Amino acid sequence: MIIVLSGYDGSGKTTLARELVAELIRNGQKAEYVHGYEFSFIHGILRRFRKRIESGELTREHDRKGSKRWYMRIWPYCLCLDFSFKLFIYKYLFIRKIYVFDRYIYDYLLSCYYQGYKLPLTLMLATVPSPSYGFWLKPSLDFSLKNRAAEHNRKYFEEIAALYDRHLPSNMSLVETGRDSVSEDLEKILAKIDFK
Image (cartoon, rainbow, N blue to C red):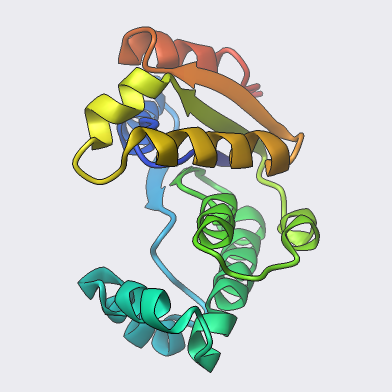
């Protein structure tokens, strides 16, 4: 089973994903946390780009060149291919565990689109394999600002929230986060999953 927690920065993905795995293990389930930025199939090809992105070099280059370099143009497609392959492996070959994904391809595609990449976004989102259960964590604006004020401003959170509202696939269940405690947010997620 694949459970995906999707959402923009400051929505509580990592906290809730780790709490969900811990809760599943306490209840006798075999569960594992998977960070969505761990590459698989084309890891060797993408490793160089990942290092450049983590160092901030690729972002600066994108700002200067407006995504004109070839590797900037193919980056979202590589991510899409890699996530699709990874999901296939986890869903059909590693079937004895529940895998909780902290982030999903939706997050990366919407982030790339927000940054100005020219993408056939609707088509790309429609072709990504669906998880067993997908949850869109939508935080309150105040919660996002509190968690990520050093990285993003109010305008960013308003714009990225509108982008998620418009484009996130309908198979993702909305969970509003940051209004209640982590345990209450976790209960909202657990209530929507059938473990039978």
